[in-house]
Amino acid sequence: MQHYGIIFRISFSLVFLAMGLLASCGKYDPPAELDPNARRTVEQGTLIGGTHLYNSHVWYGIPYAMPPVGAMRWKAPSPAKPWTGERHAVEKPSECLQLAGSYSTSEKESGEFFGSEDCLYLNVHAPRFEPGSVPKGKDRLPVMVWIHGGANHQGAGAEYHGGNLASTHNVIVVTVNYRLGPMGWFYHPALKGSGTAEEASGNFAILDLIAALKWIRANISAFGGDPTRITIFGESAGGNNVLSLLLSPKAKGLFQGAIMQSAYPRPKTKEEASLSVDDGGYENSSGENLLRLLVAEGKAPSEQEAGKMVGSMSDDEILSFLRSLSATRVIDAYRQNLDGENPEASGYSFPNLIQDGVVIPRGDWKSMVRAGGPANSVPVIAGGNRDEQKLYLALDDRFTSRSFFNLNITIFEPELYDATSRHSSDAWRVIGVHEPLSAIQTANRDFYAYRFEWDEEPVVLGNDLGQFLGAAHAFEIPFVFGHFSLGPADRYMFSDENLEGRLQVSDAMMSYWAGFAHRGAPGKGLAEKHPEWQPYGNSGRLMIFDTQADGGIRMVDQPLDAKKVVQNIASDPVLVKADWRCKVYRYMEEKGRFVTGEDLKRLGCAN
Image (cartoon, rainbow, N blue to C red):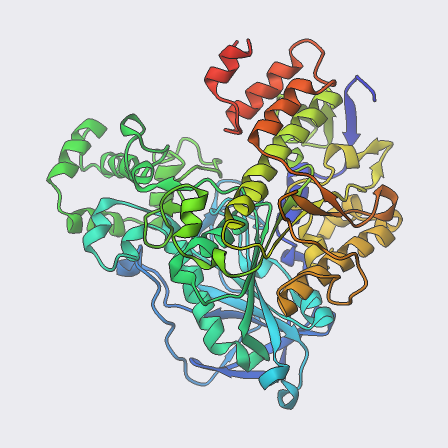
């Protein structure tokens, strides 16, 4: 391998590529065409959907709950109201309020707001049926409910096109919006007296998803779906939310299978979500941001004085103050932009997946499973991508440089780049696959694991994008949906040379996912033509998804845990140059992946 920098002269921004793959990219799809044959009746009234790609019908923007605005902010979702007349359902609904940034599909400048608090809508993709031929009774089709990713503060359901998966594999695909950022996750003790125990949980986004599943169970028969065969699936933060639903006693009976793609769950306690860092809380807790907002709105001269003020305020006064603010103002407190000095900041941290003990159980993995969600009774698939971390390393100035508007990209040390990705991605897989599945197997052995390894991106101007990006985070999404229309990114990701192998991998993934939805087990795929997908078991069996040129689709035994990840760094023969091993250890400590500050001192890497 070359030890000098590799320069990729590519005529698009890497940021744009990442954006395109994180949403399977509905932005470039043609509009749906209103079709009288897509008239369906649900509890709230009559819908007319449209014809769309892949010989499918689509119904966009179906309200499943009341808008969570005004006094309904930080309340459990209420059922949607009926409408009069026929509702045309061919326009995509508003995204939930969020900031444009690296991975969003908005044309807004980075750091600008788009979307709305009025966003609790879902979308239905189905094979194209005439009104009289919609499946009924035992002929109804299984339902697959997609929960989008985006760090739980970006993304939208309508940006994923389920038409191909629905039409070619006889399923109904539903994509869902849910509240994002602090609109979706906000735990504060003041909420305790404002409503039910669920509303005091802070997990409003999870309550949204539960409400959506209840709506689907009640109405999906109108589209030919079977309410007794619902599979939830999601990627990244969406995978985290799938796991939350698996653990939540409030979600029992609402779905019969679950698929977690590249999850990275890190639940927070109520104390972490509400207390200051000095008092044991998490960065950007609700308590910290309440103080910031009181100061910014002129209610207190300093955060110290704001703290005294909060001590004398009633719960109603605190909530009235917070609900009186615009949602953008609340989010600006989280990205510390209340003075307008950092308008381009699009990312921010906030506590989510809050272990309140009601919606999400308290405790470690095993105790959460024992607490009684669906995890101990429904089949589960969990997996990830071999090179998850490369999507982020590619944008990290310590590993790459970008010049000429991101047109020239250089990897400083390719071997270090690959090693850092390898070990950090392994840690990601332990956190998102092995740890949850190992906990679930104490009560349920009906679960399966996979690793996505497709890395045959084209060579551009003599430079190998397969090495630069590989099987990076989110790259499996187009394969699962069988939808490779990413607009201008198409020509850089997908080519005539990788078409045959790409479609083979996609066909297998779609078939396994659909087979799981139809039968509760991936088996040999819906078409019964692929290798038997065996359960995870005690040996950590994984299904590998790759082209024939790289070993094909196959089962391997690869048990992995935190101890093994750290041992692999210590024994990696690549990490011999200068301080490379310490660089990997420090990167793992920075990401919170099995290496601590004390470990760095012990290993001689603290400096």
